[in-house]
Length: 260
Image 1 (tube, helix red, strand yellow):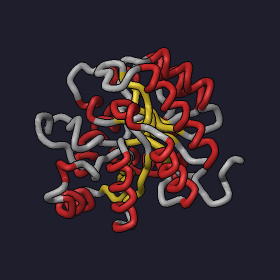
Image 2 (cartoon, rainbow, N blue to C red):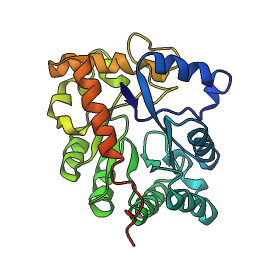
Image 3 (cartoon, one colour):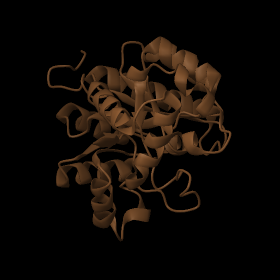
């Protein structure tokens, strides 16, 4: 049994065939899904999906692309969802200096505000990072100590590997691992096995041999198979290991865990 720990079931790309997508995933052995929000509308959609499907859980937050849309009303909705435990994690949050769709100072401030919300409610965080390794590592060192977190779509960055291990974070391993000559394949053995999670980031980042297609959670086994080969173990062992890790990632999100 696999867990897809980052899948945008709330994307418009799944609007016409979501039930079929979930059926294909379950048939492939993917039985747990974490659906993160990336703006206010998608966070609301993630909550609705989690309420409708017992095997789907929601995270709520704002992606760095949309950090400029964060305001007090948005924050109040995220705060309420985390307090009510209708969302099990905060995010997708982070920094993205590749596209710079939101000003960098706004990205940094909104990341800090979301990390503080997560700390207040004792929930894990889902972190997006692109071309912002130094600022990300510094902010996480200042704001995320003691939090559970996952470095989503980890791409093999040495700086983030060091920071993630130091903080006890998890690493979301997805399609990058299957790309020919990708640096992630060289460094994945250095990630503690207790910190490995599987993800798709569907509908984005389809793994080999599905590149160029819409990604789906049913493709998790392609990543798991590659990870098993690199770790010199079996795909069943990878499924068991990463499923246990997923439960540990969410393990602190229980009633009474909120931090004053």
